[in-house]
Image (cartoon, rainbow, N blue to C red; front, side, top):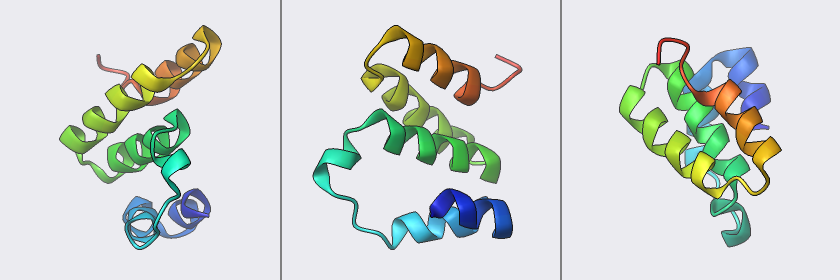
Length: 79
C-alpha cells in the first residue's frame, strides 16, 4: 500500500504511511521491508537513510538472484 501511495502522492506520503504502520516482527527483518524503505528514502532525497536501508536489504537478501535484483533497483546509478 505504501508503494502505491508513494506512486500517487509522492515518496514522503509513502514514508508517512510506513511510519504510522506497525510492521510485524517477521517483516521488519525481511529484505523486502528494508528495500521498500531504501527505495522510498532514495526517491525522497534522503541519501543517508536510503543507504542505511539499502545495505540492510542487500545483507538480508536470501538467494543471489534476489540480491542481484535488489542491487539493480536500489543502488544509485552514479555509484
